[in-house]
Structures are given as structure tokens and as C-alpha cells.
Amino acid sequence: MRILLESQHLAPPRAGQAWGILVMEVIRMRKTMIFLASVVGSAILATSASAATSYETEVQYGVNMRTQPSLSGKVIRMLNRGEDIHVLGEASGNWLKIQTKSGTTGYISDNEKYTDYDRYSTEVSSGVNMRTQPSTSSKIIRMLNRGEDIRVLAESGDYWLKVQTKGGTVGYISSNEKYTDYEGGAGTGSSTSSASQSAIVKTAKSYKGDFDYKWGAEPWNTNNKYADCSSYMQLIFRKHDIELPRTSRQQAKEGTYVKKSNLKPGDLVFFDTNDNGSINHVGLYIGGGDFIHASPIFDGVGISDINSNYWSDHYVTARNVL
Image (cartoon, rainbow, N blue to C red):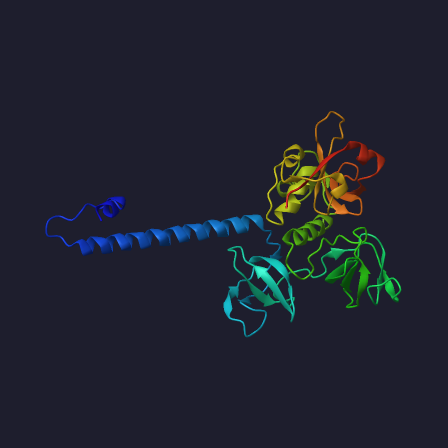
């Protein structure tokens, strides 16, 4: 008993003092310490989860988050307008499985009035036939054109995707990566990075033709008039709560290395355009052998072929920061 008291920095009882009172005090102190430890641990886990996730979807109208994809599911709380959330996947019955910045997961209605979630987040990279069945012998519905946005409903075997066009037509297309920027995990929420990659590419393309190129310029400091290659990358990733360093050379040290043969949409690609052995230019790979970047070539933002003679000769490396 004396050892137990000393471990809690309590003095043994004086003559006539009850041992039982001190024992109860020790138990109370231990319970308090365990409770505080659990609170701190939960806070650390929540912070880590938030830092690793991109919260790309904004709540447009207050909506209840529930424990199950059903109106009979218990309401966890109401999500407020302007709150940023991450969509983990689409659940059957017109529901979205989502995660809040505090790390809480639940389900909300997929009605478009509640969020700005983009269901048609996959882009066709090269013209591809949409068919009635997942087979080359099935009837062709029509050709999907390059640049068309579609919704991937499911993966059908190893070679096909079940998709829906914005016109509501449902069919099957080849899952070959040359045809779309789809990265996998349709409707399951199993791949948070693929959803982020698709969203980042879409954000990057939304600036095509914008800005005047000016070395050292930043859109947020020039009323969105000027940008250089690295500030353009910063702008794209900031839209998804990812902060990049200011220069292309610094950005080339972020994330993980990617072999050129393994490039995926959303990867950063780096170049040495001065032929002096130092990285001085950056762009974003968007699939199909193309990358988007701010460059004096366009006097703004445009798309180039990464395998063209010039860019292939000046290519240095690639990084994934998601």
C-alpha cells in the first residue's frame, strides 16, 4: 500500500487517519488520468485524419447526417451551409457516404440541392464507344467524345466500366486508362486519393485560358490576372486544402516519387527548361499523355503533350502529393 501511495505522490496516512479514504483518492486520480489520456488521443487521431484528407465538397443547404443510408437512420447532426466535407462514395438509395473535418462519417441525401458534389467527375480522355453490354460484340449506343464528363456507376469485370452520361444514358465502355481519367473505386469510397485526383484535374482544367503568364506572380496577389507555373499549382491544390511550397524546385521535394511510365492524373511533373540541371518548371499530369501548366508558350494556362520532343527532352521527374 505504501508503494501505491508513493507512485501517486500521496503521503501515507498519519496516525488515526483512515487508509480507505486514501485508497479511494488514488482510484479517483487514476480514473481522471485515464479519461484525460483518451481525450487527448482522440483529438490527435481526429487531427491526423483531417490533415490527410481533401474536403472537396461544400454543403449548399443544411442537411441531416445519419448513421445509415436511410431516413430511419439516426441523425448524427445537421451539416451547415458552407461546411466542407469529403465524399467517400455513393450509397444505394440516393445517398452519399461522407466524412466531416472532425473525422465523423455518416450518410446524407445525394439531392443536388444539398451539396456541390460532382457526380460526373470522370472525363473522357480519348473517344470511346459506349455499348449496351460489357462486350465488344454488343451494340454501340454512341461514341463518347474527348472532354465529355461522365459518371462511373461500377466496374464490370477487369475490362469494362458501367457509366452514365449527363443525358442519363447508361452503358459500358472499356476501362483502358487511355480512354478516361478514372482511377478506380467507383461507388465504394475505397480510394480517397482517386476521388481527389479527379477533382484536382477538374479544378486545373477550369483555369485553362485564364491568367497572363508572369514569372514570380501569384493570382491571389494580382486580382487573378497573373500567374507563373508554381503559383498556378499552389492555387489548384489550395482549392483542395493541400498546401504546396512556392517554387517548382521546392514542390519537387514534396510527396512521393513517381516513375514517368506510372504517371496518373493529378501527379506533378517537373522540367528543366534552361538545360542547367535545375528544375524550373512544373505542370499537372491530366492523363492521355497530356499535362496542364502555366507557361509563356500560351501566355497563360494551356495543355501540352508530355511526350513531344521538347517536353520529353526537358522532363526531370514527377511527384504524387495526395
